[in-house]
Amino acid sequence: MQIIQWNPKFSVGIASIDKQHQSLFDALNEFYNGLNQQKKSQDALRDLLVKLKDYTVYHFRTEEQLMQRYQFPGFELHKKEHDSFVAKINEIEERMQAGKLVISIEITNMLKEWIENHIAKIDKQYSNFLLSHGVH
Ligand SMILES: [Fe+2]
Image (cartoon, rainbow, N blue to C red; front, side):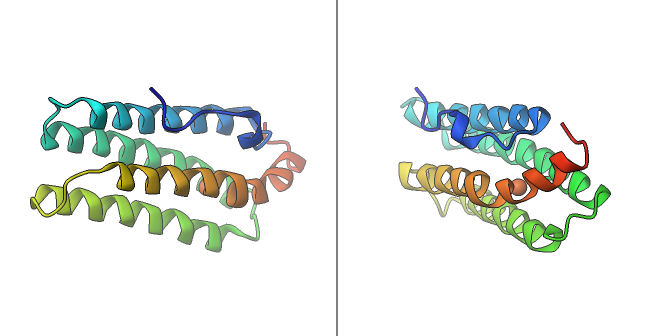
């Protein structure tokens, strides 16, 4: 089952980034599937959340390096968006670890909505700029 599905409307026109976004979707779907398996413990779910976070951090770094290399003017604002999302995942992870939070579909939906919104609105802002600098 998928909570998030790739669709051409998410394409930023840069193949390497589109591929990473698809892997990000895969990581979120894995997390979602874990949530739907009754037997999965909160510890196992937390492992899936960490996997999602690690891939997110790796992917954000790729985007940030590209924006910096070509001196994209929206870099600072974009990085702030990334940092706040990573902080959000860290907070969820810490609260889970402390036994103060049980992962729910609402939290999973919040992650999904953030990712979809970020790609559709924020990532698209760098696409023409990077494409005009020969990134593909
Ligand atoms: Fe981004």
